[in-house]
Amino acid sequence: MISTPVKIGLVLLLSAFVLGGVSTWGYKKGAANIQQQWDRERATLLAAALKVEQDNRAKETAHKVQTSALEAKLREAEAQYEEALATVRSDYGDWLRTSNERAARYRVWSEASTSERDRLADHAAKLDASLAEGREVVAEFRVALGQCQRDLKALGEQITLDRELIGE
Image (cartoon, rainbow, N blue to C red; front, side, top):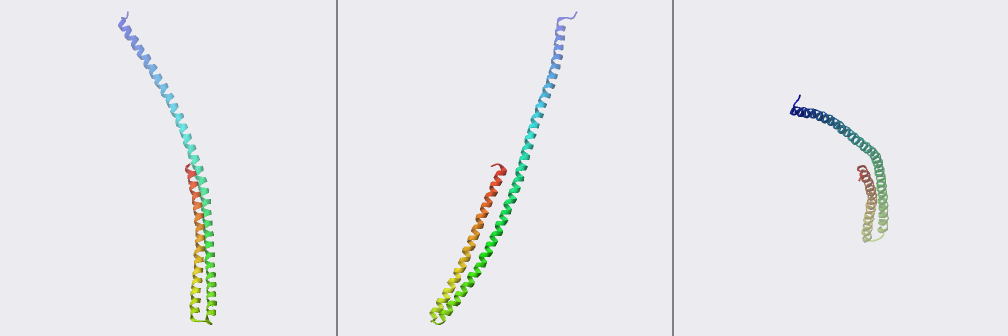
């Protein structure tokens, strides 16, 4: 017969094998479970990342369309500005021609009088020319100010579009 210490040793040895087997089986089962959880989490994160990427692409496309429309508005505003400026410059030529006609009239009137009236007529002509130049400056300023206001409005719209793009 087998002695008690040997029996105890065999029981311990058998227990160690059983526990080792159970432990290995548990480890493999746990590792497989963890791997499944990891794979699910990774798939969820990948799906979320793809969603964010698609959303950003859609936002970028909308932003490009809106920016292109805004740039077209700016080009149109610039063309209107140039047209208005050309009109002002044409008006200045008319004002200057009218000023020269008045000066000639003043000279005709002053020929019958003394030299003092000649100087007065020359001075009036200079004032009239200065007035015409001042009108041009004021008209150009009005046109430029209008263009600045349109530019500021367009830039404000661009800032709004940019903020919408980045989610602010």
